[in-house]
Length: 480
Image 1 (tube, rainbow, N blue to C red):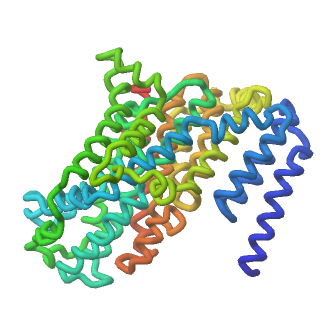
Image 2 (tube, rainbow, N blue to C red; image 1 turned 135 degrees about the vertical axis):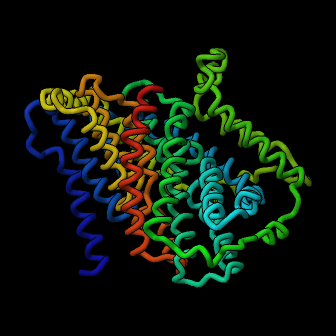
Image 3 (tube, rainbow, N blue to C red; image 1 turned 180 degrees about the horizontal axis):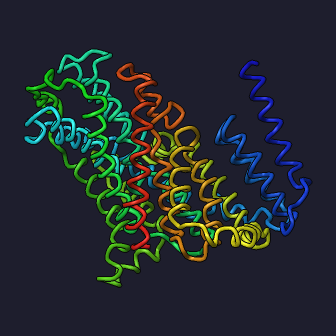
């Protein structure tokens, strides 16, 4: 069967579910409009997983608009009119302005050429991973990988490493793994955690602060990276004597000193990050800072784009707006985000009744279920699915199921904590080529291979699930 034939089959199945899903026999207690929305969700999910993520998202919005109990105006407001969309567009543009400077390279080299990195081979590896993790907290995964890929190749050249060497394999795998982990550590320039927060807000009317999210996700990411080093040390076990006397300071000579333009771009970006994080961290100490959060999550990046567009150097703005919109914004992600926000809004709509149906149906079943069992199920589900399918589909599916189920558990499990974990774990995609674009790029570089990525990726996945359940969840539940 050709790829074209398979695509046509998936298209037929998807459209059949979207169009005729409403005619599926209703379970007791479910409204017809609820089955209509379930059919749309199932059909679009198949298209997301097998065909594309962009135009099926528009199809999703259009189909939901035709549901009489919803209508087009509310669904447009819930999708493209959602604050998350403008937040992501402006955040992508702000990070694009930063990525166009040598600053990211400068940061990376400062880690791997530091005195600590020169003390020994493993200290160098730890410094390299630390560089990826720290920078990745503020930069999108693909941009981060593209920044570090030439650095890794230059390191391999200086150390005279060849393709197939365990050390070169470890550095490339470590880069891919750390890029994914860093994407889950903050909501800054990272779609998945933002989507999870958006779903939670739509379903409950409550919000999760950036500071609250980072207060649990950053420790989990750091601890996971520490265990990654141990996995490489005792399972991959490369012979590090080959790079005993390591010094790659020569790379720093290629960088020019920081100029005023770079400093200004960095200063504005730091200002944006402070506006994001400060309110939720200081709300109990300085209640006045909550006035900033009332302006909404999109306010800081909007302000950042304006400042970047107004300030000029050599008669040119810090950010070329048209260029930033074309090159900096990941439009496929934006469109799919709009579609997933729309389906999340529809499934939690009171007129549709799906949430009420799930709670009424499952409350008797879940009343005796151990809370830790639910936490493990949703953590493992998100982490496993994201390693085989789209990260955004993972966030959508797992969060949509998790919120009503946890609400049905009558407060025994923290809903915002689990939703935040789903957002974080959806970024922990590193075991297979479909997991994230940079994973396929890592394998395609020739410095690692699919077998190595899968073997160490699944071991690392298991470790991160344990860390998240037994360390991450208690921290998140205490803060949210």
